[in-house]
Every structure is written in C-alpha cells, then in structure tokens.
Image 1 (cartoon, rainbow, N blue to C red):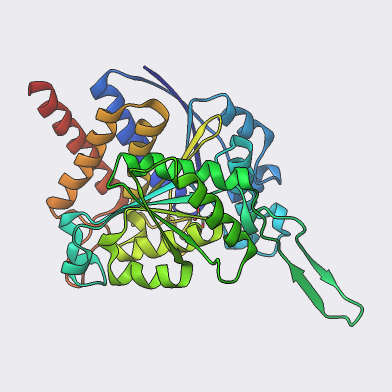
Image 2: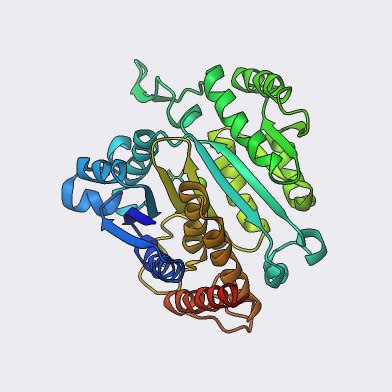
Length: 366
Ligand code: IPM
Ligand code: MG
C-alpha cells in the first residue's frame, strides 16, 4: 500500500518525537511491504517564524492531498502575546477544522510494566483501558461571538460562547457507540447538564441516539463527578463521550492516571483526512534536550494505521513493540522513578524500531 503522508513536526518537543515516530513508521512500512511517501510542512510557531501564519495555505493543501497527517505539537511561549488568531494553537485548531476532524479519539491504557508509574496505587490503576471520545470542532473552542472588548467604564470584558447543534452531538455520539461495540460495550457520556443548556441538549441527543445501540450500556455523569471517579476507579471506564473542552481536560487527567501524558496518542478523524498527534503538547521546558517521551507520537502512528488505513496488524505490531520495550525496562525521564536511570528520546525510538522488527519477524515465522 502507498502511505502518502504529511508530517507536521511543529513546535517544542514536536520535531524530536515526530522524528522517532517516522523511524518507527519506516520500520513498519519496510516490515509489511508498504511504500512511504512523506512531505514535511510547517505549522504553529514554526510556521509563524517563517510565514507569519500559524497555518500556511500550502500546509493545508498538502494535508488535504495526503492520506493522513502526523503532527508533533504546537505552542511556543514566544508567541503568547500574539492575538488569538496568530497564536501557534490557532494553526492546529484551523487544521482540525479544515480537515473536518470532529472526532478525537484518545485512548488511555495502563501498560502492565508501568503500574508503578501512576500516582495511584497499582491495584487501582491496573487494567485501566479507556477511550476518550472528544468532540473536536464545537463548543467553546469555536463558538461565536468571542472577544475581549473595552467597556464604557474602561475595564475590559471577555466573551466566549459554547454552542452545540443536534447534528454535531449526534455524529460524535455515533462514533462513541460504534467504538464501544468493539470494546466492552459501555459508553459514559460526560456533561454538565445541571447547569449548561448545551449539556442538556447533549444528554437528550445522546439518550435518543443510544436507543439505536441497544447492546451498548449508556450512562451519564456530570464532569466534576467524572473527574473524581477517573482517579478513584479508572478501570471502570470504557468509552467516555464528551464535548470539546471537557475532553481536553479529562484526557490530560487520564494521562496522569496511567503514569505520563507522554504516553498518550490521539486520532482526529471523521473528516476527509485523519490527523494523528500525541496528546502532550509542545512542552517548551524540555524542548531540545532530547529527553521527551516519543511513545505518544509512536502510538499515534499505530492509531493512524488502524483508523486511516485499516491496517490492524501494523497497528498491533507497533503497540506490542511499545509494550515489549516497556517490559524490558526502557524509560524516558517522565517514566523513570527516583533512582531509576532513563534513556534519551532517540534511544527510546531506536528500541521501538528494533522491537517492531522483532515482532514482525515473529509474526512472519508463525
Ligand atoms: C490538545 C491541546 C490543544 C487543545 C491545544 C494545543 C490547542 O491541548 O490537543 O489537547 O486544546 O485541543
Ligand atoms: Mg489538551
């Protein structure tokens, strides 16, 4: 198969982790007989630095004409004082919209080798395997009007708008129900229906939609209570369906629960072209030091294989390779506990490449 991809390294640790993810991608392509065609483009602060635009037209063009997009991260404090539409983050939000990527899948699982990395007791976190399904093109992130405006009294007032239409709720709910059908058949819809109109409509539409999936169990929780349960009993969660902002917050929390945000991968799908990126962001404090965890980016490649190319064996090969490397005790700094030694970003990437080859060879001889 020809895998025609656009690579967007972006900012901070984005380029470092993306480089390792591409090496793993290459190993998988070689092992399974696929051909890679890659083009690299700028996004976020990296694009602002050369084009004064966080999402240059040729980046959008390249993404739309490829079969999938792999991104590193966006965000750079150097641009914090820029107006919203010129911040690095605007590049990513614009790209999600251009691609029509309304469904953000964020799996969070506890790798057996990492039970001790979680701030929770091992018996609490052991067996955790959840999938956050975050609506990605609605809510506060995109709602109009939005502004920071002066008032007659001289003080300013800021406005954001949360809006959700029924079709937007219904299509993301369907993604969650379909996914749950292939997992443990449980969807928890997270909202704030005791306060927000958006959430009341959300809950109504989800309940209506659930009737079409009688074999999936549906339940509902307010977001504050869900946040608490996520740390108290993470293994009870299967599919978590939620709106854009709640999903942003709960997915970082899920990263903390399973030991490190650096492990979390994501797929943004539903539109013309899928976008795959680690959840961790640009982490400017450790950028350029070669210590970032590339596993979130590498596991994002697995999601790409699965969701953009229906290459399940390739996806599983990457996921088993990551498990193997962790079982062997390889740890980047974020995963190392006090007294444990850690390896560099590139060394971790290298270990996964070798493990991919080993898994592949084993599958071929089986
Ligand atoms: C994420 C990030 C982004 C978001 C930022 C970088 C715009 O936090 O993907 O979770 O808020 O969606
Ligand atoms: Mg986030």
